[in-house]
Length: 305
Length: 301
Image (cartoon, rainbow over all chains, first blue to last red; front, side, top):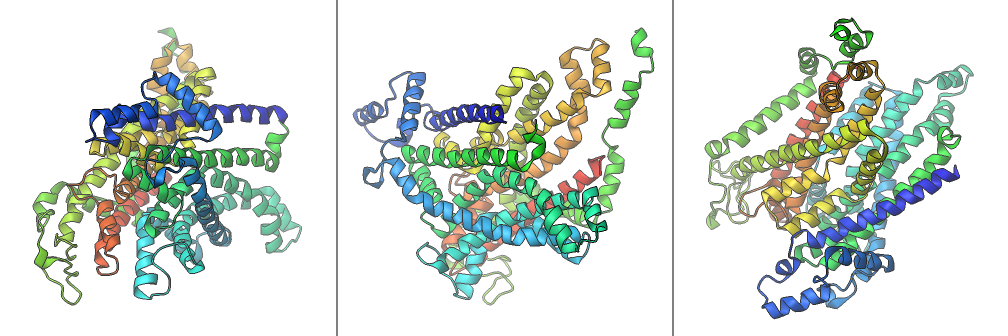
């Protein structure tokens, strides 16, 4: 078991270096980032910026320096935002993004667990068909459009909730709901299919034969085993979830990391883009790692190996 | 020669393992009303994309300030010449949606072709060669998987300069790891099968075994994954356009129309609504067909 964790830790280190390399590439992929950042500036100014960004050195040297900066959390100063450091800008907005993601994940679980279980238990019945149909619909809707449609109904038509922002509880409702329409179908599908797998197993039949009530059979025996794939999927899809958060923030002008990065991308504010992309990737990496470790505890088959 | 004329049990097994015959798959597909509806919608979308310049009632770029914010024809103030209304500079929404179908489908299909080529070859090599090569390739897959895909695509499209080719390449190159995972898993399972061993025992080279015997057996998974990936790519392209780093500022795209519509959501609900419905219908149609294809092609079900 310990070698397993050590192996995972080693892999984690390699992945982090890889993530740094990709983040590093964002600035260099265009060939000459300075021409991109200041297309009309005189050569003297460009030379100054090149100097400041250290673009004269060979790429491996630049990457080594970048890695050093990554370790110390220094991505340089923003070209805008009064020259605040990119790291500070991102960290300041991180709680908002994480709150939005967590809220929507809870909401999605609150819907997907009961509906998915009921759907599996009563397979093929009306509820199952409605649920499966809704999953399809949900997975085919662009998140940003769902957000605008909700806005149209709840803010414009019925004037119940604010159009944008993050200042009040009312403002939190629409972004959370929007992101959930993206997450719920994903989770519901997994809950349903893993419950279907489990329900057919011998030990569930045994539990029924023992005379346990349906509630106990499902709650105690089936659900426990169906939880494993759910945990894996949440971990694996966390990147997708954060991607959804980025879009949702843009639609509702939520002051989170996503909106910051999208704005920085439009302004070609590379330090902020790199800091934001790197830190969001780090969250995905850590969640994946945690899921791996959790998996180890939840699944005795691996633990014993 | 002597070996190949022997009725090896391994080769008989190979026949049984082949994907279900296409005609049977199609019949299974046709029996499902939802999938059939999906196929019909998809045909309509493809047809309108191909015929857009001839069937669109207006020039999608033609502005008319007198006609701006004309509501859809069935509401008060609607005009039969502009069935779905006009936008903030008086352009016909229906014509723009018809033309937008071209970008969506083009990017969706070509991005998936890029992902497919990269992902399938790396997956094949990774699964078949194994060992160190496998470890390296799977670490790269892990790294790619660590980024919110959309964010990475957004950053790279912006850094490379938005264009149709950039969007296709970036979406394609950020979506290959699914193919690599799926194909690798299939190859790992196939590698142990008797007919692959038989092929090797017959003296077939690794490359030939891989292309002639392993690859064809992964086709059904690749087909199913590809339909679903086209749907994803269309959603991603729309998201990129919505965020303002789409394929082009001159040609209308659905995502860009929704982005413009967002700014006028309080005065003209039809601006963001219809392009979104177009995306929804297209993606839903592809998903329905893809899901049915999975049921039809998967011999396990």
